[in-house]
Length: 138
Image 1 (cartoon, rainbow, N blue to C red):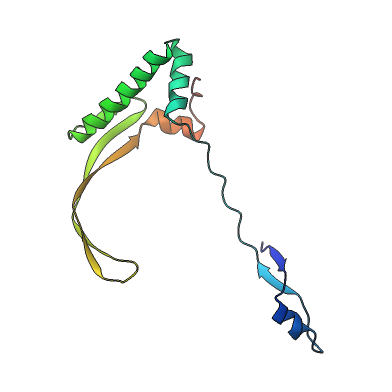
Image 2: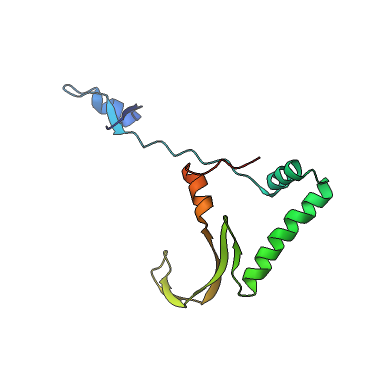
């Protein structure tokens, strides 16, 4: 279905429309509405969830969450795969050097090889997100 929107004409369009046999209505297709962005859960929110679930102090909870994230980052940075059963795995992926294009000028540029972190969700995680698994505890 095409949505139409009437727009206000410019002064020049108004002057042209005053001529005999002309109309003053301008019709443009409306843009599709943007998808709503999902809510974000930040590091502070994670700390609050862990604190509520474990009953630890704010300091201990902060240390635990920070230690977990640091262990994942340093493990992947050292070339290891970090697997958390039911959740997923983090691993490094090598990207080859390649030739790209500068979008402004069209000139060829060399893009260096690099190692990027990759996350692969586990089956339980996928099922929960898809609505087929048990709801996460909060």
